[in-house]
Image 1 (cartoon, rainbow, N blue to C red):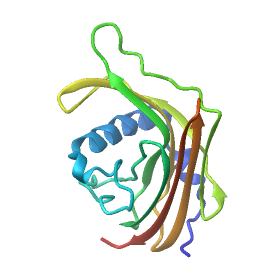
Image 2 (image 1 turned 45 degrees about the vertical axis):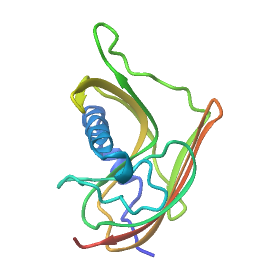
Image 3 (image 1 turned 180 degrees about the vertical axis):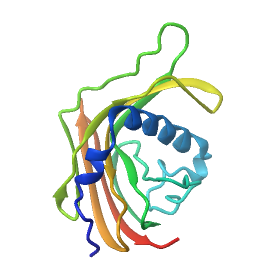
Image 4 (image 1 turned 90 degrees about the vertical axis):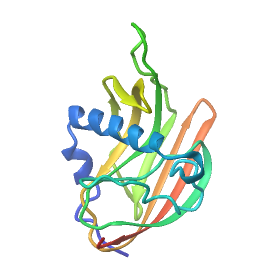
Length: 172
């Protein structure tokens, strides 16, 4: 399996402003896909490469439940993904994001725990609609070429996420 220099390093390099901006960008990315190609609805990893930005690789969350995805990702790019997240339409004075109390939220890369950070975005436009986002997120420094297993688990009021990514970091 590939070796990350230090799986926790990437999480430390994302300051709150950058993390909030990445969360908004992640939602724009996730909401841009038609449902039949949605990386979030994808149960196999087939659509993981959907319109990836040039400076970061986004991994999709899920709509809950257990999902196992196998996919290539770009080696040498930082990785950003939700452990648990929400977004909502932000109209008028009601622009605070939904914050959800999670009883569990964790991610591991090759069995090594990752730092999970809370980020809330400023208002942003996605699909032409003003929105705000909140979430528990992880970031990784660029991965060296190789194979990795990423495990993501969260629970909030009985809504559970249990995702395993089998990642193949390759040169694109």
